[in-house]
Length: 377
Image 1 (tube, rainbow, N blue to C red):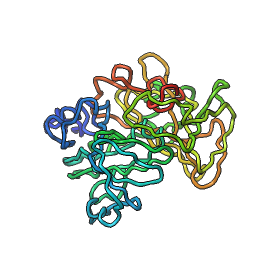
Image 2: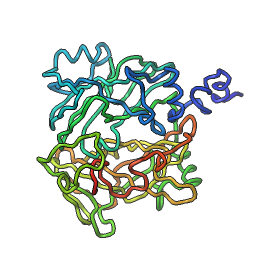
Image 3: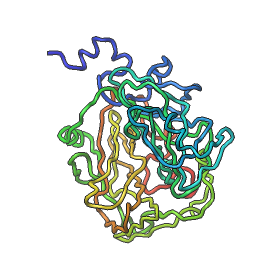
């Protein structure tokens, strides 16, 4: 009996997507498809620096629409049609503009997609976007869910942006979120994950695997700073400037405490107790832990690139940085409490370059770390 991969190879499609018929498309496959004007296209040429090991960064277009409220267009409407009833004013992003906290903006992106059969997409904020508490989601025409592009969708892409703590300076070409392109609907079971962990350790210590790999919060550390609490009424953050700001102007350190009371009005940066490693053939996404056991949101940017924290022959080297906000009421977070789970997915092909120094990656071997915008965080 022929496997799906064999049948897939016989169609000739494997030369486009990789050696496996299903999975996340790696950067070199995305680059090849983009050159051939397949799957992901743009009004302006897509730059090499947008292509990550398993995703492509999406760029803001030249205009932002300040809207009264967030929305999904639903199955019978386009985003443009819905905008007519909610736009308050239009903002030119060509030379840069300030997006204020507490406001909601819709920005058409430079990229659009023309997905073929069995190809779909998943979006996330970039790590640096989530770490400055900018809430951003992808919207498509006739979309019924945020951050999801349905199979065979062909059309424009939009970003919903809402800075929650810090006002930001953004411009045409700024990259706040990223798109992963998937072919098929691959399943990666806990049994397969346990086998992978036995072959290549995915985390330090014992692995708690149940609907993904559990991660817990570190509130003790080595007796020093275990997190940061965002200050209010700060200056602007230019989303395109790296290492330009002093952390002390925007953040208050949280010292080792064992437990932390999360205030609903505050935003926190914390770290996982475990170190993690993502093997080159895989990507991972952090999904929220059961909301019934905790009134807090753990992540905005939950995507882990292949190679994150991974070094051949060495133990996992990077901690997961957690963007944390309580939901409705103050909540006590305890050291070692499970705060999320990593769900793994295979790539269709291992990327020639993985996350790390060779690509100029900002967070390889990270411990507790603020976004790249800060020079001393």
